[in-house]
Image (cartoon, rainbow, N blue to C red; front, side, top):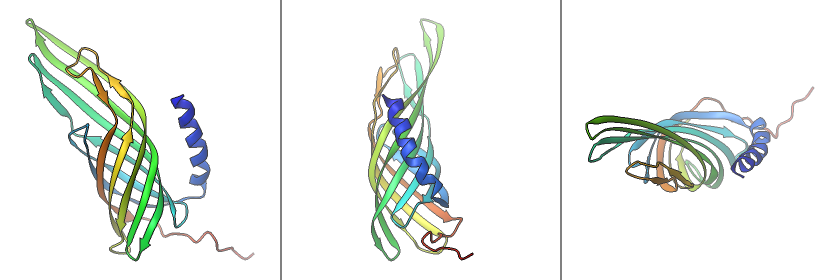
Length: 196
């Protein structure tokens, strides 16, 4: 079911990517309510037209360490998102937009404990697919620099970690993104035709 949804969305988005133009890239930071640690990554913009943009971004979150009775458990998170933006407000240097898209989250759980005098080490890796919905704002403060901020909710399933201090981890969470985009290409006017 999830694979069919992914293939369907990719089939719909890939033709748009053929008509798009990679115009911005930049660093981003985020905080997610379930991860409980700051994350850092890369954010880009593929411009389809003045209203529609495709936004790929990848984040890695700092490890979250939990102390247990016998040692520690570390959780590492990463997220990859492919979102579509629709600009609903364009007033001078302020651009407001809604977003929807796909989220792929990965979690690694690592146990390092001493139980009854014996070392116990274990690692588990889980990847889950989710859906994003949210809104954001971009501020065009110059020709090349565009700060942005987003608030999003990710609807995700649960990841199971049997024998860990937390048996299940819900991937549904709110997150705040912020960053700075740098223009690397000018917008092309696709309505203009060339004369031969």
